[in-house]
Length: 232
Image 1 (cartoon, rainbow, N blue to C red):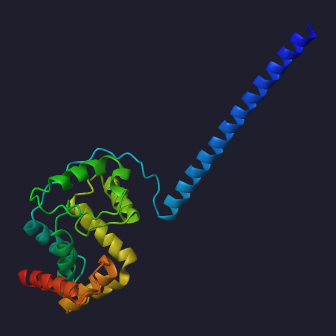
Image 2 (image 1 turned 60 degrees about the horizontal axis):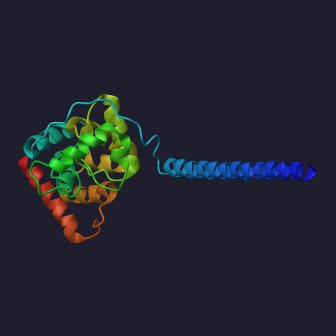
Image 3 (image 1 turned 135 degrees about the vertical axis):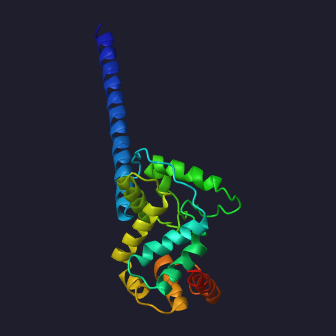
């Protein structure tokens, strides 16, 4: 009887130890999960990304705007901000190179004149912030690329009840971004009488393209800017 009793007690003790080990394992895994989540939160905060999975409100589908109409609206918009003709043309030369002045332009989507891929991207972006901010892919007339700048555009569009692909929303956001973060660039564009020099300033200080220091790239953007200057 004593042996049986001891065997039962031993079995119970082994069961208790196994349960304790399971609880310790759960606790270890929970702590690891919490640390990973904390690390991700810290990383996204450092990058300027917050609440990256936010659901978007329902917004109107952006209209496809042809480059001619877009150029007219960009010209009038920045002229209304007190920019010189040369300054507006300098910006437009850069936007032309970046996106062919298409507000729905997704980086690399050039073969399809209907921008089917770009429009699909816009639809998914408007639904959820994460769909828009993930990855380093350029979008819009200025080809906003980094997660923090794209999140700012997404938040701005949502606050206006508009799509990230809406031209007027992008122009307003672009002007706000320039006025608050690129004041020296704006100062030059409001006073310049040199189209080519101003175009290079936009390239180097605002767009910061990979090939910004190549003379061929500078000449290309200056040439495009001069073309818009002569148009308007």
